[in-house]
Image (cartoon, rainbow, N blue to C red; front, side):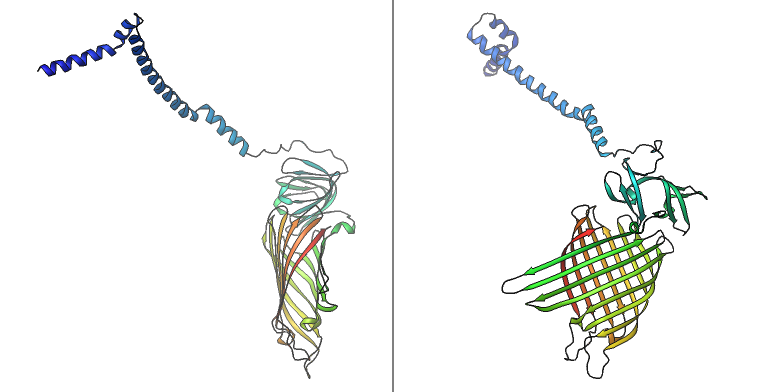
Length: 419
């Protein structure tokens, strides 16, 4: 019992000694013990203040979901939303120029050179020749006469106004059509040169020293376009020599005339091909025929076309086995495909294939394929990398009894020029 009483008294004494009232009474006497107790109380208050600050800080973190965060969210939403182009209330002056408006709202003044294959060619008054994807054109306003072709084959001529929704052609018989029915545009009375476009690519390899080697490769493509027709002429060639001895010599020329019946379907009237490769025992080979073409995919940045048709073929061989003819005429079935993909504004991938099924005497089946990756360096110049594959399933055996190899592969790096 005594021990319990003593413990209780000691506890009560410590509690009173540490209490704020006792500290205040002793502080009035300015004794050192009073200062220690007062410091103890301050430390205790400091701890409490620290906890209070922690709570305040916690409230600050929670408050990030309040007005500050909403302001940040609004700023982020504002940055991610594209600016809408102006309305259609403003129109350019009625002068002798053509005007086009981009989807960004900017206007350009100049001359419309033509629109086909979803690409508009425009000669700007200040920026010279430009080419735009049709999807990037918001309006076209031309006070001079343009020839217009619609997807149903109907034609119209006169001043043209194209808005995001419709096409209006003024003239003797005004027409208003939905914009989606427009197929092509051509300036009325345009000069012949304005109907042509093309591209050429040249590669050259020179080597000297222990081996003297010269290798030349070239590709070229010409097109003439009107609202309803398209004429194309393609060339690809490769010539090389090692120590003055020719090691390769092949040349191919293709031509095609297309008559559009609708936006995707057209007739080929006619097509022709010339091919020469002495190393495959082909002195000359000529193929001609008719066919049809269809656009499987027709998008602003992706086009895929297939073609097919019957043809006649005549081949002249460098040499032949005894008793066999050195030339042969036969029928052929021709088929082809072309895929044109604009990966970006500056990078384009073109995959082109042409095949022929003929008789065994002239090779049975022949294949020609070109894969080209084109990088736009400037407005006029491109860097082209092409992989070319030629195959004849049954090459003609020459007088020496040797059958040429079936496949030829070439990797060509060239500098291309657009015009």
